[in-house]
Amino acid sequence: MPRLLVTGAPGFLGRAVVAAGPAAGWEMVGTALTHPDWVALDVRDAAAVVGVVDAVAPDAIIHTAYRQHGEEAMAVNAAGAGHIAAAARTAGARLVHVSSDAIFAGDGDRALREGDIVRPVTAYGATKAAAEVAVEAANPAALMVRTSLLIGGPGHAPSPHEALALAAARGEEQVTFFTDEIRSAIQVDDLAAALLELAAQDGGGPLHVGGADGLSRLELAQLVVGAAGLDVGMLRGAAAPADRPRHCPLDSGLAQTRLRTRLRGAREIYAG
Ligand SMILES: NC(=O)c1ccc[n+]([C@@H]2O[C@H](COP(=O)([O-])OP(=O)(O)OC[C@H]3O[C@@H](n4cnc5c(N)ncnc54)[C@H](OP(=O)(O)O)[C@@H]3O)[C@@H](O)[C@H]2O)c1
Image (cartoon, rainbow, N blue to C red):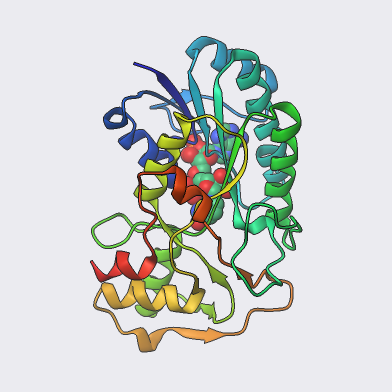
């Protein structure tokens, strides 16, 4: 059975990949920064990355580990991804690196394609763009999967985005959901299945893997809250500030031609 190493195994996406791996024919090994149930690994430590990759000897690696905020985000996201990419190349392991729609400025008017210009406008986006540069430099054969807001949907543990919408609807949080920030939210098990398929294929470079619907943050929150039977009238919407990426739906047409997994849109997910 081929062996697959997943970084960030306790994370929202990492958990879904680890859970789906065996049925997809993989022996799974997961790493974590702080959770004792997994192989301990800080991806900022290049020697530790080499040590874990050597010890596990994976056929493929899915790199999900990251930090969204904080001073360490650049080191974790960019340097860490570079360390994983270099170790994968040396070990002859296929690498699927998880990237983000946050690398784009979002100032266009159509869905984003793989060849579109990378120009992040947020600090987080800058770390994920730098990660792509580091991965490509260290391992040109790596696949870089750009994805979007992760959702669980009905019957699944809520993602942080869904939890925030539910908290706002219950009056526990004061949140403004942007009416003009358009993203291709994707169900986390769909993304995990797609990543596992792609780990078994050849082909590198960027690939867009988002859900089929482009939705504003407010529309997404309304779907989440409506599906939970809560009052969508509690949700407050407004235009995004000037420093946010606005129009970032992903054109996942190329990915869909390579995948058996259907990349469902959020409307279908919340329709149940
Ligand atoms: N969430 C979204 O909506 C979204 C949207 C677009 C793209 N993405 C991408 O999807 C990927 C997964 O996101 P997620 O929301 O599933 O992440 P998550 O739930 O926040 O989990 C992140 C994981 O990274 C691990 N980690 C953090 N710092 C580390 C370090 N220095 N060394 C090793 N591991 C470290 C954490 O380990 P511990 O648990 O042990 O602390 C955690 O398991 C990321 O690459 C992200 O950029 C996410």
